[in-house]
Length: 170
Image (cartoon, rainbow, N blue to C red; front, side, top):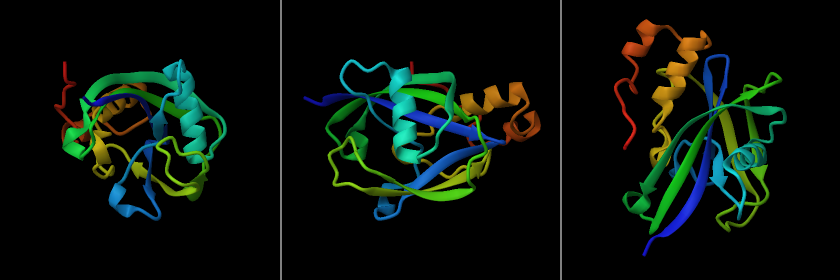
């Protein structure tokens, strides 16, 4: 029987870009967005701020909105788990660095610490590389919100975006 894990994922947006990272010592893990596992009885809104700060080292992150929710069988990724994922858009209230390395000291998966992450910004909508583990599931919603707010790209660019036409699993 698969194990159910509650996860949070952060789409951290700044100046029309999305924050992504790679594992410095494990590049096979792919490009990802910050996130992690909820602690017992922890609300998703609290978990996303904790996880994003732990993984990125950034201070001053604020929740802009909840983007979506998904239940995903992880068997396609070689795990006997089901992830209940909560996706949030976060923003930085201070200008972040362009690139940096941050070490997470308390990995929720039990891996030995520290784990070094190399962070960089990917231009929205078309400059975001494929994200590992289906983490790009709700990028189309993030882009639509940002277009409506005038903080990302143009509607013309959105039409050719690689995420156009994606719809959530119901």
